[in-house]
Image 1 (cartoon, rainbow over the protein chains, first blue to last red):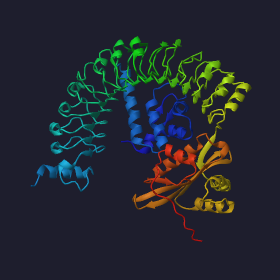
Image 2 (cartoon, rainbow over the protein chains, first blue to last red):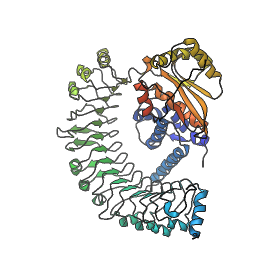
Image 3 (cartoon, each protein chain N blue to C red):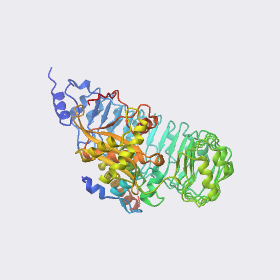
Length: 88
Length: 501
């Protein structure tokens, strides 16, 4: 299991080249609704990292970050991408 | 009489803190939470919990359930998400489950569901399902089904066994079409097919009684919206339409319509006069039609990131419009005046950028003391006295166990919040007492208060505080609403003051 510092360094968005710590920082520094706040992180309109970012955004709204959950969602997405690239 | 099995099970449950000491017999256990214990198996003796209604086994390492669980004849709610199951356990056919959460496993075999007709709520999201054809019992009771983030490619033969479904989530699959068979979903209210590969939608879809539909992030290029008489909300974001049209018959009671990042050149007007939210953000629209004034209930308009220069005068007549996003348009001065006349509560054009939330420095204290005057002008229990305020804020700054945050627009303090560490005998540890949350009048409605409190809540989490608490003036309706919306709940306690000197 990864510790908090490792999770904060995990890349969450390839398009915007942001890690978890940066995404949290961006969300904490905006009051925009999710759809707009997401673009501050991703700098694009794609939905590939939407699920993970939405978790972080919701956690920001509730004021409590579950880092294990964040790591799980990111790893799950990477596994999915791998499976799709293998032609599932 | 001594019950050996119960004694063993009780000892096992005790080590996970799953039951309290007052429990004397297995029949007293109706709810059991064994989540997050790295369990690889369950003891056979779990079968004696004949009165168990709810069992949470999430976040473990289980890949099977013991056969004896068939004795759990009252179990109606089972949570096995985030385990290591590759198939839904056969044992489920013997349990009268009403709700099953099996998300985030590696399940590809769900054939047992054909023997589970009483299920009403089923979550199979984030698994390895490639199809759900003919897997449900013929006369099942399923109302809510979540199969998001799987690998389902088509639903042609799946809908026929979902005739009672009310909420269906197909988000994040590989579906390319909404087939004719969808017409059998006579009870459907919510349908989420975002992030698939949809290219075509059969006409049968438009005859549904569905209320909320999300079709965003698909590959739709051509769509003629019509009928859908019960529809209240539709999201079409992130499709690249070459042709999108809306019939007069489309969704007469529609309240929310969103079509963001769809390459639209024209501002389409849904027929419904009940519209409350309209989003055409990030398109190529140049003109907002004068007829927008027909949406007398419109409270949220998002047209940022287009090519709009002129807004219609009629926009100023939309008296319910309190949220407006217009940045990223080459707006004329006249358009800006129209916005100023309407003066929506939240408007990105008026939002100041570059406001930062940071820990207070000694040089900020004087401005913070002044800012407290704004707060004390509202709170009738306090008098404004700069010297006292400065002395208090300075003492807080120097005191251990106190956090002070400020919102700054360059060098100006425009908002602040403080949190003091207290010890709670009720919680058995430290709690945070939040005070002095205030934002300058001209910087309100920009989310600065939210940012301050969110940041302070994450600081409290870092410290491991058990709770954060605050007091708010009973006459400050804005503050009470603000805290309620952010998850604070009102307690039964009242605050009393006794002046010592």
